Image (cartoon, rainbow, N blue to C red; front, side):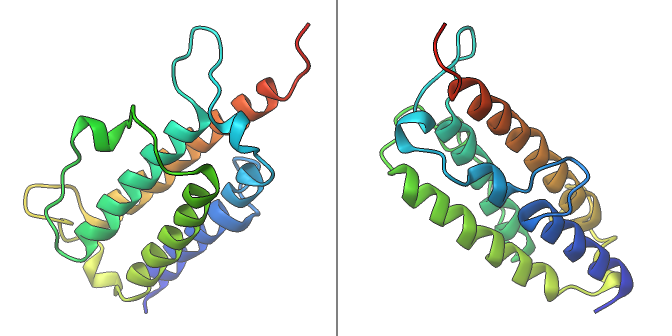
Length: 155
């Protein structure tokens, strides 16, 4: 494993487990979100914590699949589910498992793999992985903000 792959793994670890410049880690953000809270919306914002988490999970499955050579593109419903049937606690468990699958895939890479397109016609593995981390931090920031606002007493 090369130096740059080690750096990517470090960034994935920081995003998920802590010591992240953006603030809280994914684990910290998801901790103690009650299922009822995960299904609520804010005024003028139609997404729920649960729908955002499922969106991030779906895109992570795409990234992991593409690292394995699958030419996966999400449908609109896969990308932003509107009919959520998965229980919240199961979604949190799936996020945890998905992170470890992605981490294991990245561990298999060499630095020479990072400049190749993740799939023909797509961005490089390097850009995709950094973009995925940025995408996750953006959406988990939304979840952290929603969690904070939704836990406040109604005035």
